[in-house]
Image (cartoon, rainbow, N blue to C red; front, top):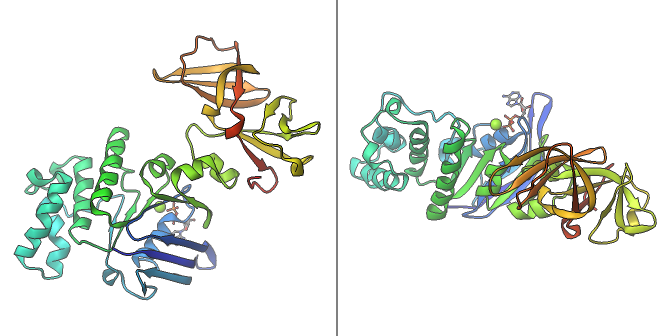
Length: 352
Ligand SMILES: Nc1ncnc2c1ncn2[C@@H]1O[C@H](COP(=O)(O)OP(=O)(O)O)[C@@H](O)[C@H]1O
Ligand SMILES: [Mg+2]
């Protein structure tokens, strides 16, 4: 196992900058997830860690070793891709053993590694099968098994669950997290799915357009997003955002552009007069209060009720623990938990 350091790393394709100076420190044993919209540079960064892509600037260290010029096979990493890339004409056991065979390992050594890996992944009874005889989830486990038998310093995953159906994705999420808890191998995992990031990571790196927007533990990002991008990207349903200004007569209240007064946890005197965005997570809006919401759609899930409505002219989503007996077109009165609201500068997008 090893720590990983990404220091001021840049990547250009031709004259086109794709990674624009990125710094991440990954602790030995940590599970770090790179998340961001499609095209933001996640795979490129991961491929640079793997050595599959040359870096245009900066430094990558695995443990104490600078690996900028070290070829992939000598980096002591194992990568799992979205398309599992199994060899169709080889059994599960042979697929898992392939890299060890390439290195010329003895059969006894191969058995010693493949058996426990198969055991951990629940593949023991499938070792003689061929990939075509496996379900998508089982194939994904074989791809992970292939990585595990190499006992690398670092695992790299690039959207490994994207090809699975929704239900399997959820169970594989738990499996991968559980696997990491048992093996404790340093892991860098790429996904565009913020729920995957939130549920699995020790630490999340939020990227946009080749830059890092914020690094933090899942709940840190949820509770204290640095800017509007992170606030909008993390959390589902997304944070509600209302445009307006501080109430000039009471800087501990917010006034939306359509004149609705909302509470703030604290006064922000310095921001009087500025264009601001008020952020309230769906669960920060509570039933009962003096703020009117016009109900548009109600979605009961059984254990909660999601209500899509209008607060003034702005669409808002509320998640109530209670079941609500109300019809579209009717009015609901709510309050906002002032201690969990967020305030951003509308111009810079930065948190106040
Ligand atoms: N080999 C390449 N040549 C030119 N542009 C590339 C190449 N690979 C990726 N890109 C571009 O780099 C950007 C980041 O791509 P990528 O790292 O694959 O994003 P992500 O994995 O976050 O979806 C995209 O704009 C993509 O089109
Ligand atoms: Mg990608």
